[in-house]
Length: 162
Image (tube, rainbow, N blue to C red):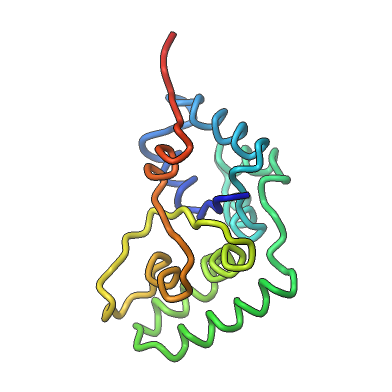
């Protein structure tokens, strides 16, 4: 896999521009990209999505192979370094603790160990920010991080009507 999807890429797509009822082609395209080995996400993202009670939770439950294990030894080692780095940073404690309790540090660690690019809708903030953001932590670990729209362009996605 070349790209790892953050949970917010699924949630924002479903809730906004690629609603499952108005743009099923997007979700079909995701399936194709997963089948071709271009995309994946991690087990913890899958658990976050499956915990809901909506169409996205149902969709995620029907696709267990989209969510790969993130408990392998190399990922755990990088995760530990990410936690230490974030804990030593000058971040807002609540924001820091929320970040560490979710899938984000695991996704970054998995991307680091597999050479994947993280796909997230979080915005990169100034380096001296008090908030922990996925793109900023990716930068600290030299893990590429792009948005869904950059991903669509990189993989030349096309949703056209016949």
